Length: 196
Image (cartoon, rainbow, N blue to C red; front, top):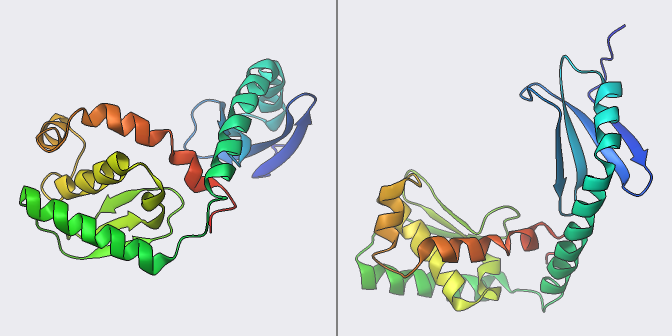
């Protein structure tokens, strides 16, 4: 009889609990290790949980190594979020003032600005050119805060991340791709359960 369950948790010595989850999109067994979420194994519909568990057990040394790295990221994220809580109104004032200054300096126009406590993004720009900024941007180095704001302002003109986007962003700042990689290092900070 085919296993109809959508999820199963297993424990592997030296690794800990692992979540096996049935996935309609997965074509192969896929293991991921994420900060504050642990290990997830995506199991295609035509693969048994038993087979997926065997793969996870075989990859136990690799999983343990990645979990050790993730532990450092989690510790850094918790330290980042142990700073004094952010007052959303103060964050909004700082970010709105900065986006207005950068838009004026570089000739950008946008519709509305929203400042939110987001868990997955530093910023976004809608099709209607509304810009969302994460209130935690004010905790970042000023270069990264400005990069995020300029990134979203450029999206008011170019919606994708193709070569034209990066070329346009490069007109307003040096080394945008390098700064983007620096910003990505702060991404796990948003996932911390301790975010105020």
